[in-house]
Length: 469
Image 1 (cartoon, helix red, strand yellow):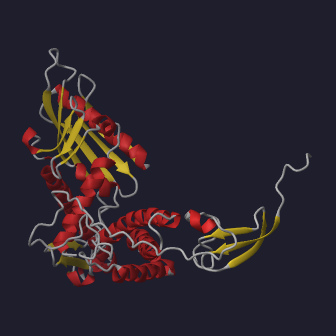
Image 2 (cartoon, rainbow, N blue to C red):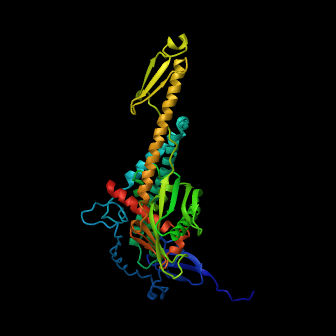
Image 3 (cartoon, rainbow, N blue to C red):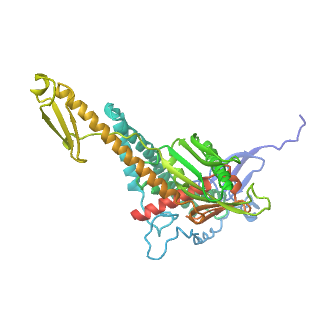
């Protein structure tokens, strides 16, 4: 190794502007600095926060001069908010949450989520205790309801913890920002952290806010979707096939399973009608907003002169009907016994073996005298009564779903549209919330979250406004 090519290290002193002296070894005998970990508790010595003036480092013999006073912190700028026309609060309208959020970051909208978070935690512990009990699964339907509530509360409790942590970290970074120079590295890091934490506070706060709305019992059910061609002839059938492909690809991205139940093809490869079932988690919760008349504007494959046609399809989204279970309350029936008539001798005619059951809520009467035993006749009569009540309940469910489907699809006319797909402009417009997107090609390929998420948010805001939460 060549000699005299490396600097020599000697005993040196590092003198801070606050008067602190640190012994070390360096190539210079005296080093003057403006800040150290003694005068600044957050300084670790790993970053150069600022460059001291030349006058402080020009002399190594004189005692260090005190740094000039720090400039006053910059005045905070006023926040500017943008409002969606459908979610802005008008004069006299109660605050409903909506897109405006709710902590000390926005003091004009005071809403304390801590009581709701504690309520979620308490109920979560109760449901967890109920599910761990041995008799929890004696009633499968009740166990299924508790399981769904457990999953929902688990997400809300996790969101509540993340929300409270974001608020605490946000307060800590704001205090740090007040004590730092505006251009220091710590101040820049604090600003970046504040931006991230404000986004988390808004995200988790919205999740807690929406969790205040009682969940619908049908949101977690599997879903049956019916797509039918409307006005437009063959072009309408082709568009029905495009919609089916769009929903199928969306189901794939969500991890759901789609199974075709029935279909009727058209001459050009479209569908006059197609019915399919979607199985998965929260299927109806996300797809229920697709019900209605979908209008398409494009040059169809059947058009020879390049003219734009307007066609429609109807989409009906229905939750899968649960198995109808009939439970007969003993207080709702009246059991009468009497002697049977006809052949049979003493075994039938001389004993009270005939049974007549009257179902009080419906007035239904069932009579059985086939067996010689009164107990056997009663069991048969209850079986007949249960079958009749089941048939009646199934008919009511079918009528209800038929009316539900009719309300969803209407007549299929172009004026009843809920959404317009304009292919020449690559535009899709949802007329219920007045949202327009210019990515129709991606949406037809199954990217529906850009429309479903605003629809879900609008629906939750409407429910919160109705509940005045």
